[in-house]
Amino acid sequence: MQTLRPVYLLLAIWGAVHPMYYFISWFLAEGFSLMAMVDAWHANAASSGLVWDLTIAAVTLTFWILAEVAVRRNWEALIAIPATFCIGVSCGLPLYLFLRTKPLK
Image (cartoon, rainbow, N blue to C red; front, side, top):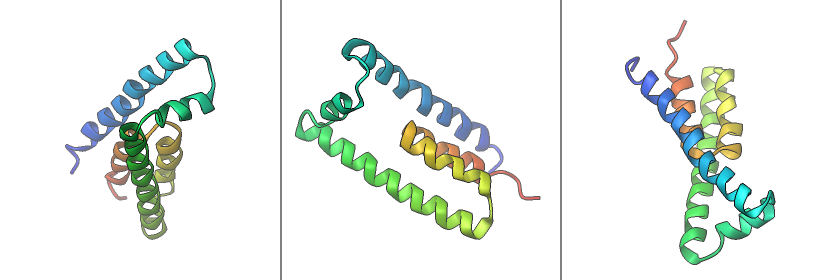
């Protein structure tokens, strides 16, 4: 499991940086408006489906994190929840896996 930790960390960094490039590019082109971005996410049925897919995945990940933190008492893993909703599942999930696979003391 220890060999996967660096992979999870790299995926979390990639999951933060790569999507953020597109968000920042969009804001620079369209102006900083969160509501306009939400409207763009629902421009057609395909993008709405993707938004709902990611939303359901984010909520599911949140419940999983909360359930495991309650048992494992790995409180630092809670940081993956705001990472999921502020950055995306592409960052939150690998970040949580990185934190979850920390060696036990």
